[in-house]
Image (cartoon, rainbow, N blue to C red; front, side, top):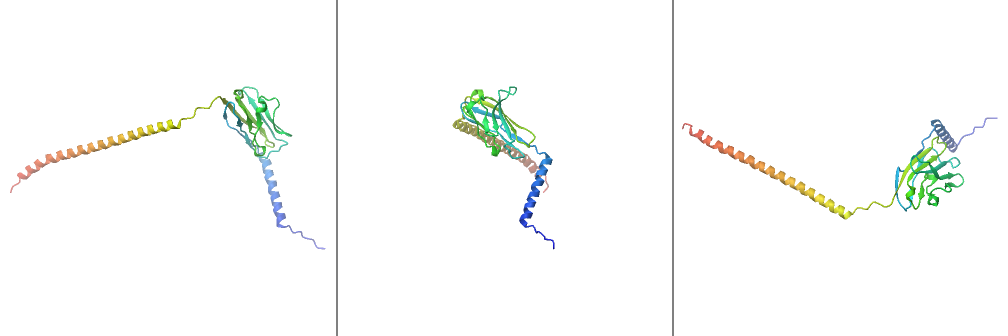
Length: 225
């Protein structure tokens, strides 16, 4: 019996190529030891007393979130030297959950989206006692480092008064008018000086011509017929 040749179809060849490429990419990632975890937060937040504010925290990672290994915590400090108090954490069964008996009670809740690497929280009815340092910790294995974002949170009792646009426009118009007048004055003075200079030059030329005419007449009189 002759040997039977099995011909591979273009679809099978394409699948084999994709599988090979995927394997190569996974091998390259494992060899490179990808560990680029970046947590993105604002450095400062100013919130008005009694309002609701979003405290943002997002992160970038080389890997998608594996909910069986993912971990994160929100903590609060009165100052950089104070003890950290955990008030929000990730639970493998319940997802993002406030810690029982946390300092904010039911005023804090998760407002982000894990699928989009968004770990933001919402704080309602902001109080003066909420001022302090907010820490966002993220761990997303197989990333080997823990991400950490630090936010300085300040509470103000009133917003700065808005600027009066009418006054601003009036001041701007006055300044603009004064500046235009100053420029016009400088141009006029410059023109007058130039005109005076031209008059002086003309007068000097006339004087010189007047001095030369008698001498020319005298020379003509000395000539012999």
